[in-house]
Each structure stands twice: as structure tokens, then as C-alpha cells.
Image (cartoon, rainbow over all chains, first blue to last red; front, side, top):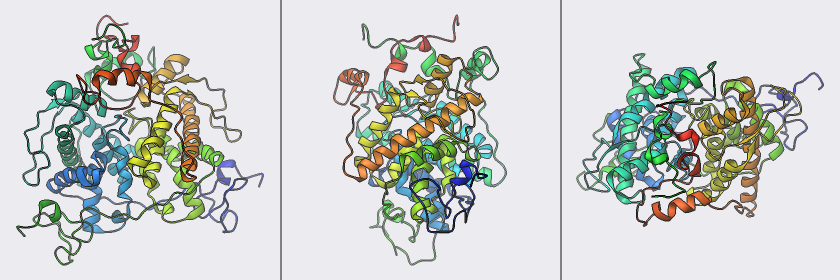
Length: 265
Length: 265
């Protein structure tokens, strides 16, 4: 075994783990590949209008929330029309993104659901521009846009705001600050349900265009990111910046980022 | 059809979609349930030491990154020992979390991978304390801890930092700022590979304890969150706060959040 690397020793599904606690009954090194090989998933075009409604209904379905809603709007539609492998996906897992991952308010769960759906079908090089387009559109768009016509859970006009951020915390708190409506309220939930519909539609438009070979990103790099990267990007004098989010919400000295732990409000 | 609600009309897998572009060959309303029903996933205990190594190797495997690594450390171990349904999960999808979701540097992908694994087995009420424990531990821990003993990709001592944040942007940029090592470099990648090992081990310890009925969270709510919620929580005078992240990185008036678009540096 001395000529086999540690990584080869950690064999894939059907193989063995040598020297560890786990060992299958199969012959040693029967499958010397590393890590589980998963079948290729082929995308199908889906309907943006149905997706919008699936997103909204999915948000409320069992309280699974935004990430499940957006993911189901895409992959659920494929499941309902095309069966396996789509129907066998453990959709309940996508509840993970609810409220920005178990209420931590990090990434907007609707964006996570859509990006996860893209990721089923496209590797990172193909997916990059799709995610960039969706996320940059989100940063700059006043939500919600969608108004359900029937079976409306909270039948009110919902005021809008632009978040400038893909983070749930910024998106929701800025909306609550702007509108005066509590972050924990049925109206705010409705806002997020409709936003899930909006993200579902946009993501489906991107996916359908990609499948047709017609996808083109319309949103360029944000001005703030260009500016910060000019000193903090790769190879620059202070190359510490990581990421693609609009820098302004946290790095423009706004009232929100003043010291709130001293002499506040 | 007039007595059937819109939500019933959007039927689950095996059902029909009435009035939309999609219709199956099955009799109308054959399956009037909403949304795909997925089988229950039963968790198995897995080995923390193997998980640590799987996390590290998974991070580098095909460049899939942190989220894939942490998820594979948990669910991949179950796949290699127990086969279906674990082995049929489309693991490649978990590349979505790489670099905080397609390089957007939102949630740390290793945390997303671990939380997603939890979500396969536990609904939000059960999962909440598990995620809280993992994320709060992450905020307060100096990473990386793990040092691979063989097949080390970047064989150097890796300096550590505490991020106070579950966000990739803050975690990586603060580490780069502290250590002086570029955010886009092989040493920084190695830091994140080892961090993936650390998150994998901790998540497995939480999962194993949960399966044994012995899980107890040790990390309480952060002082900053308690303080901010005293005015911005539900039912308080300005109930706009959303989330559970430590508030200090963005709301303590630190140097990092000063106006960087004017007279900077």
C-alpha cells in the first residue's frame, strides 16, 4: 500500500477507507476513484410564470421558506414534468436557506435556492456569469415586484425597497427600516414570499436563456467593487479583498455602521 | 374546478398543473398533494477524524471547495458506508457554496455545507440549536486548527485569526489583513482547506451527539446580539433587526467600516 497516496486510500463510493473506522465489504480498491461520482444532471427549460407562483407557494409550503421556494420553482418544475432524477432530489433539504440559513440572515435564501439549482447543471466556470447576473440584479432591484392574483396569504399592497446587498440581514432590515414594518411580521413574510417569486422568475429567465445559448449578462461589476479592487484586488498593494458584493453597505461610513455600542442612538 | 384553490391546482409530483404550460398524462388531481414528497433521510453517526480529512481533501477535489468538502465529510461518509439514498445525492451541486457562493463571499461555504447536511436529517426546530452552536463556535474560533499529516497541498505553518463573523468576506479578508497574506493565494486556499476540516469535525461532533440524544449547545447568544435586540428585536421600539450574526463587525464603527470612498486611506 505504500505506493498509494493518502487521497487514493480514501476511496469513493463502493471503495474502501483504509486505516479508518469505515470499511465496505467490497474488495479493496474495487473503485479507486476519489469521492462519489454523481450522474450528470441535464437542465430543462421551465415556465417563468409557473415558477413565480411556485416560488411564492413554495415559500409558504410547510414554512420551508425562500430557498426551498426558489429551488422548487426551478427543479420542482422539472420534477413535475420530467420525473427522475429531478423528483428524487431531497427537496426538504433546501429549507436550510430559510431566513438566510437557519435564521442567521446571511445570504438571501431565495438567491441560494436559485444558485443551487444552477449548480446542479453547470460547473463554476459556466455558472459564474449566471450567478453574477442574478445577484447584481438583486442588489439593484426594488422588491417585491410580484403580486399574486389568487390565494394571497397577506392581501395588502407591500411597499418596496432596494437593498444594495445580497445578504438577508441587510435586505430585510433595510426594508423594515425604510417601511417601518417590523422584521418579524406577517407583512414582512409576505414581502419575502413575493421576493422569492421575483427571484424565481429572474433565475428561470437566466436558465432558459443559458439553455438556448442566448444568455448574456447585463449587469457589469459594481462601481464600488471596481474602486475597492483597485487597491485591494489580486496583485495590488493591499490584496485582502474577498468577494463580489457591493461594498457600499458596510464600507461607506453610513449611519448604520457607526458605533452603535456607544452613545447610541 | 372552481372549488379547487390555486394552490391545489399546482399539484405535486405525479399530479397536474392546470392552466399552465406543464401537464402530465396522469388523471387530473390524481395526486392532489402540493409539492414533491421526499423520503425521510435517516442520519448515521460518522467518524470525526475521517470527516476532518474528507473535508480537507474534498476542498481540493476538482476544486469543488469548502461547501462540498464539509458536506461530503458528513453525507459522503454515510454514502461510502451505507450506500443509498446517500450515495445518490448529487454531490457536485454543493460546489455552489465555494468562496461564499460562486465567489460572492457571503456565508462561509464550509458552514453552508455542514448546515445543509444537518438539514437533510432535521427540520428547522431540531436543527436550530445545532446550527447556532456551529456558527457561534465559528465566530469565536481561531482558524485553522487542523494540520494534515500526509499529502499536504501547501506544506507550511498557516497563521490563524478569529473572524467574529460567519461571512466568507469577513473571515477571509480579516485573515488576510491580519496575516498580510493575499486573499487570492495558495496559502489562503490552504487556510480555507484546513478550516473546512475544522468545520467538518465540529459539525460531525454536533451531529453524533444529536443522534445519541446528548447534544447540548455550549455557546449562548452573543452579547452584541442581546444588546442590539433590546431595542431592535421583536416587539421593541425599533423592531428592524434580522438575524443572529455577531453585530460588532459591521456596527461598532470600526476602522473597516469608515467611509472608504472619501479621503481614503
